Image 1 (spheres, rainbow, N blue to C red):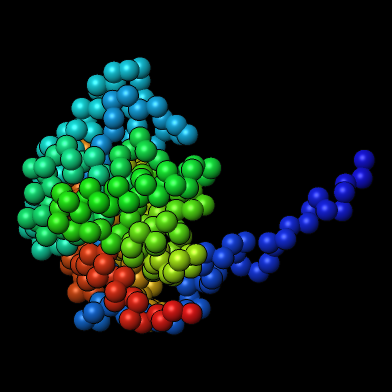
Image 2: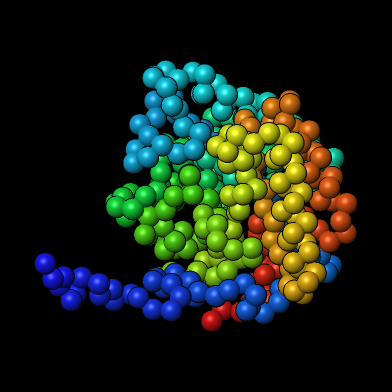
Length: 311
């Protein structure tokens, strides 16, 4: 049987990307970026505060950390709750001891259900980044555009009322998007989005309503991925964070262009008594270098934007 000549014809095939969201480029081909004070590595620390409903349908897929046994899955529900009531304070304490900044990614449902926690986040001086409504309301291909618009705007409104901050950053639950998500985020006033993991520096995305900055959060420096999904030990987690920093710092020195290092922390994972020491050890190793700039998501984006003009 002979294939129709059109079978292998793909109208979007070209050099670079098959979409217009951002211009394809290799990191080493871009102009050099510098951070304030001559720092080589911007350190972005993101504690993630999530609420997993006990009756999650896990559709269209189960997000990482979802309930996984028959209803009521109290074992996993209460562990996630432990992170919001206990573990997060250990993380905040370690950051405060070292004078480190954090950008907290928060489900809107957390702001409604844990007002004392939101107060603590405010007193700690954290930037608030929106993390969707809750972990049962996912953004995905094929969802109704108006329903997604309402989900985004309701999330931003609820977090603003609870925290006094209108979030400038966004991370979708499970980092999942629909085709419309970037457009809707930009139209809602979001400045940067942390769903795309494909770089070691911010880059500009072009939406139908204006520019949106992609601020990558590395999945390979995330506690849930390393410790829970990949079953690495706490010592391995600490070593991997140290190795990540050492390589990025060395690259920045060698190439003359700064780098971004993110550490994403789930309090029900790293906030455990036997794990918090691994985070502390890694942070001490990183801060032994004079080349670190501890910054919020907005500070990193603004510093980058002054050096990388649109176009």
